Length: 146
Image (cartoon, rainbow, N blue to C red; front, side, top):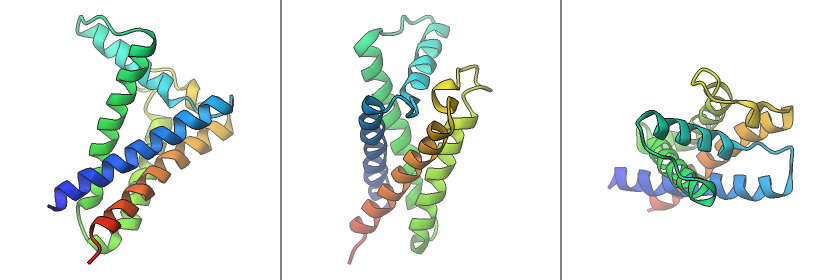
């Protein structure tokens, strides 16, 4: 049951991050574009294994789906360890994901400009993922109320 609650909580956090990102990017040109890194990663990855990557809206949808699944699994780690530290764990998981989104694209051969183009984009990237970790912790707390 603990793992299921973790997955449900992680899914809530992952969806929250995507809603926040998709909303802000439509209204603020200085906002991070994590979606562009995801699209590049998916396209390159599929091409490397000989699969024609989707284009346009289908690429965007596939990237969002992959992002939600991977982030949900990552955030579900909130269910591990001491349950009294879920808020700390949510904050650390989220901030770590945000820092990873800033620091990992370049070593992976991806363009990091969509998240490093300005200080605002860098700060928001970390804040988005930290928000996702906190949403995960909140949902997990609600699911574990007695």
